[in-house]
Amino acid sequence: MIEISSLSKVYAEATVVDEVSMVVAGGSITAIVGTSGSGKSTLLRMINRLVEPTRGRVVINGRDAATVPGHLLRREIGYAIQGHGLFPHRTVAENIATVPRLLGWQAARTRARVEELLRIFQLEPAEYGAKFPHQLSGGQQQRVGVARALAAEPRVLLMDEPFGALDPIIRGQAQDDLRDIQRRFGTTVVLVTHDIDEAFRLGDHVGVMSRGRLLQYDRPAMLLTHPADPFVSRLTGTADRALKLLSLTTAAQAMEPGAAAGDGPAVAATDSLRDVLAQLLWSGAAAATVRRPDGSAAGQVTLAGILARGRSD
Ligand code: ADP
Ligand code: MG
Image (cartoon, rainbow, N blue to C red; front, side):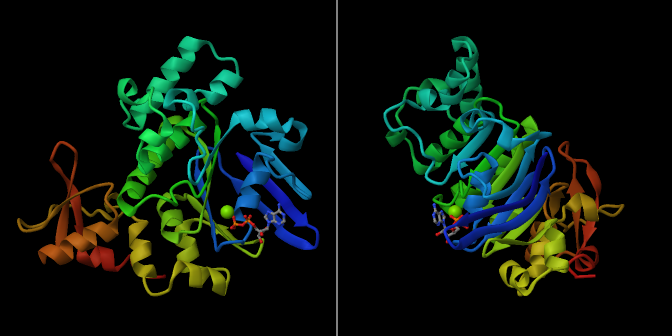
C-alpha cells in the first residue's frame, strides 16, 4: 500500500504538484492520467525520491519513504520508463540482473530469475539473454525494460509512460502482459500515462491530474458516471462513454442463466461487454453463449442485458 498525503513539489515559483493525496491499495494497479506537463512524472518520481518532495509525505507499506536513503529505496521499488532506458553496452541478461547484483544476490539465484523473467516476457533465454538492446525490436526492448524493473521482485512498480513508443498491437500485448504479471506477483503498480484508454484498460483506480492537482481518483466506472470536474468529463470523452463503460464490464458480470439460440456467438467469461456487443452486432444475434474453457455453456449475455449496462444510472 502506498499512502500519499498532501504531496507538493515547488520549483522556484511554479507549483508543479499541488497537495496531492491518494491511497494506492496493495496489489492493485493505479493509473495516473493527464495532459503533458500536468505533473504526472513529478508525482511518480516523488514516490521513489528521484525527485525530493517540497512538502507532504509518502508512506510505502507502513514506512515513511523520507526515512530511507534514496538509493536504497530505489533498489526496492521497480521503475520502468518510456524508451526503456536499457544500458546499451550490457547484454539483455546483464541489464535485467542490474538490481539483483546491487543487492548482492548469489549468481545462481540471479541467473534463475533472469531466465524466469525472459520466459514470462516470451523471450527465449538461450536466444535473447546474450543479445544487446540494439539487436532487439522496440517491443522487445520495452519488455526487457519492464523485466529489469521486476528483477528483484519489488512489491512496488512505478511506470512512466512505459508503452508510449509502441505501436498499437504490440502495445495491447504489453498491457496484457503487465496485467498477467501484476496478478501473478501481486505487485502494487502506479502507472503514468497520457492515454485515457490505457488508463481505463489497466487501472483498478484511475487518477486524473491537471496543473499539478489530482482532480479525481476513483474506479474507472465512477469517472465515467460521476465525473468530479468538467476536465474529467472532457478527458474521459462524453461521446463514447457508454462504450467505455461496457469495456469495463465482463461477460461474467452480465451473465444470465441459459444458452443462446444456435446462431448466437460464443464468448468467454472474461470478454468485455464491448467485445460481446461487437460480436452480437456482427452476427445479428440477440444473445451470446458464455463458454467455459472446456467448451460447456456457463450462461448467456443478451442484448437487452448489455443495453441495461451502458447507461449512467
Ligand atoms: P508530466 O509528466 O505530466 O508531463 P512533469 O511532472 O514532467 O509533467 O512536469 C510538470 C511541470 O513541472 C512541467 O511544467 C515541467 O516543465 C515542470 N518541471 C519538471 N521538472 C522540473 C524541474 N526540474 N525544474 C523546473 N520545472 C520542472
Ligand atoms: Mg511525464
